[in-house]
Image 1 (cartoon, rainbow, N blue to C red):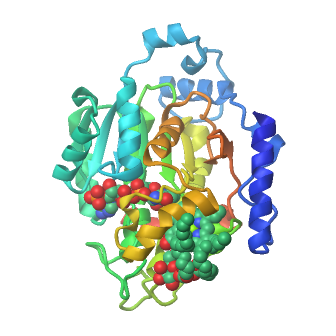
Image 2 (image 1 turned 90 degrees about the vertical axis):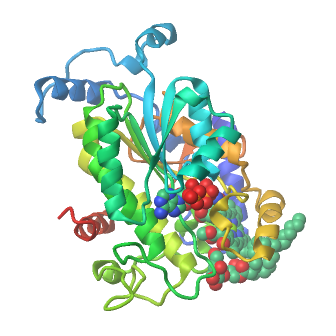
Length: 396
Ligand code: LMG
Ligand code: NDP
Ligand code: PMR
């Protein structure tokens, strides 16, 4: 597997270089040693967290020697592992729905589908054939911070534990001439994809922390198009957060730009910028909370799922040609079903517990730790995005 993984990374690398010249040599691939580093060994951190929970406070201490539940043999785990409880935003279509279905069908998960359109979600779950007892639909409109707070209250009242949170919902407005805005007046793509999820995940961190599930995870969906160390990330307009002056100004298009970098509105760029924020947020969570809580924070590029509703606002010609282009020319195409299995792995596979990782899959659908672009892994920018965002959503 290691050889095929490496050769595929190399071949993609070559393809990338032949079309555009890229400064970074890490294009879409990763080295074997990096892959090997990903091997799972959470014993010490996990034990530390269990200890933290028992004594109810967080401070440096020596590791205790309990056996991590996740490392037990399969039959033993079956006996002790309760059904997991996972919240997935935007589970009414595309990747979110496919992931909800993949997890619900295992019988090991109860999926809370956090959706803005309740009826659409219900119809989608039914027509996907999801077992009724394995999902619940709850209203969440990420384009309204009140709705995010209301969702968190409702979720808490449901009494369910939170074992995993998947920030998946997104909007993409490639053809919009002018910006649209969220309830609080933030440009819609960054407001929904980043700020809505930022508040949601910050509030639900507490709930994740309280869960007694052996492997708790917070997953934020990223993308190749936000990473300028790839060919896809070099298709204009390119993601670029600049010095965050637009974000700091509130992205309101009135006394500040609607774009994070302070530039003129461009819907495709706003989407890609929002994905950079998603990937930076995941890493900042990791740096701030992984060691203390044991929670796994991860992001991923699920592949190009060219048939989803994400492209609903693109011109008809694009929608017609994009899937065959991705299937036969870039070969980056994945079906909704396949992408759902990938994200489901990141939620529940015992081998994908490493925190701070941006996962991708090679052409044999084997997962590997991918390299983020310079901007999407910029520590200082991650901290600034975090701090500015917490002001905007009213946490600071
Ligand atoms: C921006 O433009 C818009 O400004 C913005 O508003 C938003 O829509 C954004 O990301 C979305 O796009 C960016 C884009 C506009 O710029 C580029 O793509 C720059 C690169 C320019 C390269 C032009 C090459 C033109 C050739 C197109 C054919 C593609 C095949 C390439 C590989 C050939 C190898 C044999 O420009 C465009 O998007 C124009 C190009 C349109 C491409 C749309 C991609 C999907 C459709 C591709 C169809 C190709 C035919 C496939 C048919 C398959 C049949 C088997
Ligand atoms: P879809 O449009 O099919 O799914 C997006 C989901 O987000 C829908 O369920 C949509 O709800 C929901 N949503 C949108 N706005 C809101 C809101 N304000 N509040 C709550 N939910 C909302 O697209 P995909 O499945 O393709 O996208 C899923 C994720 O995958 C996104 O994060 C995207 O960035 C990412 N991604 C997608 C790729 C692709 O090739 N498609 C590639 C890389 C990443 P509704 O059904 O009501 O519209
Ligand atoms: Mg892109 C390896 C090549 C590759 C991959 C994996 C993608 C993924 N794209 C690739 C190449 C190209 N694309 C090339 C060469 C072009 C110019 C013809 C191209 C164009 C293109 C457009 C116009 N691609 C697009 C668009 C979109 O509107 C999509 C987008 O940027 O949405 C933000 C898109 C995408 N290409 C992808 C992926 C995964 C997307 C969509 C989604 C996303 O990031 O969420």
